[in-house]
Length: 67
Image (tube, rainbow, N blue to C red):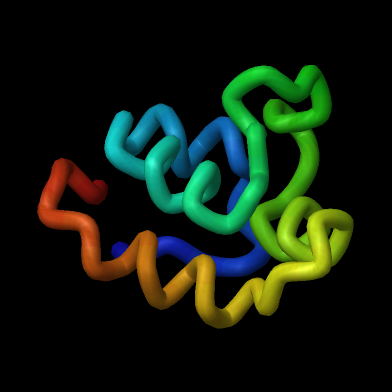
């Protein structure tokens, strides 16, 4: 199963530590944010004025473990 916009940021980071680089490349310092545990990828992207579809597409290109 791939990454989705409604998945929490924390869940994405748990799946693959390389997700951090994707978030940071868009100015999303999500690893340091307390809201990462409950905030969705979409909400975080919108908050940082980033297209959530772009973030999800990049996450889905990661080669790490995805369950």
